[in-house]
Amino acid sequence: MNRLNQKLILRILLVFGIVVIFSILMNTLFLPKYLLYQNKHELANLTDQLETMEASQLHRDVGVLENEHNVTIVHTDITDNNDVLNSRIKEQLNSKGITLSKFWITDTSIEKVKENIVVRKIYSQEKLKSSFLVSFIKKDTQVYVVGKSISHSTDTLKIVNRFQLYIYAGELLLLIVLSGLFTMHIVRPLAKIQKAAEGISNLSFTKVHIQTGDEIQALAESMNQMSDKLEHAHQALEDKNHNLREFIANISHELKTPLSLIKAYSLGIKDGLDDGTYIDVIQQQTDDISRLVSRLLELSRLQIDEYQFGAFDFKLLLHRTLQKYLVSIQQMNLILSVEQSSLTESWVFADEQKIEMVLNNFISNAMKYSTNKHIQIAVENQGNDLLFSITNGVEDGEQLQWDHIWEPFFVLENSRSKLLSGTGLGLSIARTILQKHDSLFGFQVQNGEIGFHFSLPLIPKQD
Image (cartoon, rainbow, N blue to C red; front, side, top):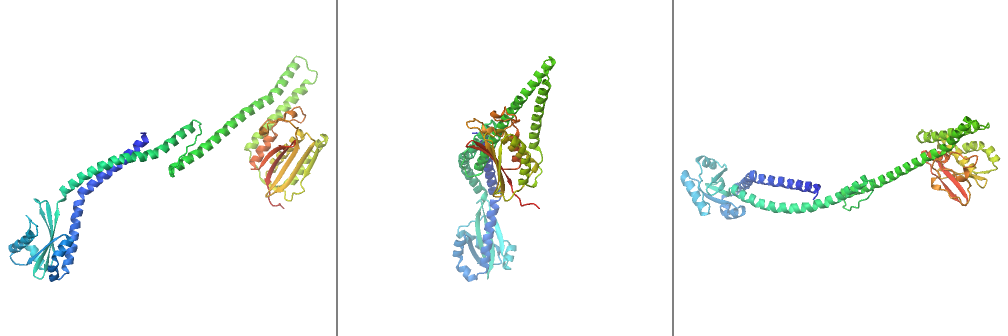
């Protein structure tokens, strides 16, 4: 039995003990007074009823009233001799089985009865361990004595309390057994939850299945939800740590080559081997490092920068952006096609400067990697959004890790020797910006082509 079971059982037993003590105290202190009050009240009601009855009717119905109300009724003529009056009443009471050692009607009481005042008395019979509760009323020339024997409750209560203790002892044993079963029914699911919580604390994201139909089941379901969320958060953290390690490794890789070249050519200059090109190589490698650092800072800034959302014409922004690349496209003998004939609404709500960066990255990326010399751009309305897509060819049979295409420093292997090959941060920058816009974006590869797309919310045309 665990500690929770013990606590629950002890508290149940404590409540039971308090109830037992309270019950005995109530019986001992208040039950006799309550019984006396009830008998007085019943006798008073009967007396009030008798006062309203005619003397002849009362004389005739004495037996019925005695049986109905469990009382003793005697009557005799009122005389001036008090001794004679008491003697007659005692004889009649004796004839009905009521023997009283202490009973006497005083002169004062007789005088009140003669004045039609109801007199109520209680005569304690200590030897008999009882009391006689009586009312005196006058009917015509007779005095009626209505009495009821009340046994002293002290001894009776001792017997009752002793018998109740036996009952309580049996109930206590039954309560211990039942409370043990009930607490086990409650504690067993809690023990499962505790075990699951310990597993979660040890990064073992287990689940607990409890069907109790109460708050414990709700707690278990909440625990399972928390386990799922913690597992996802832990996995996300592991992925971020993995990405961070790869990111650092990639930075080291990207910086290692230019730094090695700078060191080698610097030593060549020191040894007098410079043929006039060493300084140019060092400057070029330094520019590559500077460009890489600038792009890294740009990526970091975009993740924490505040975006300036506003309304602008996407069609106009796309036209302005493409103008910057027309000369390079002609020099590279690329064919650019822009399809926007179905575009009816082109005003969007976004950060215009940041979206221009996305367009620059997608267009320059397509120029670097296009294998079929074709770049297709399409802009269309799709419900309440504007959808942009750009497609270019990729070499068949390339084994590309497409799942990592958005990661920093991911560069197509066949582009590393190209003049336009960059730092591999362009798509990471585009992803960061589009995530900040809550945009639906992605890519697909099929039939020797790769296409990137994203959407922006449309707004009514601004004047």
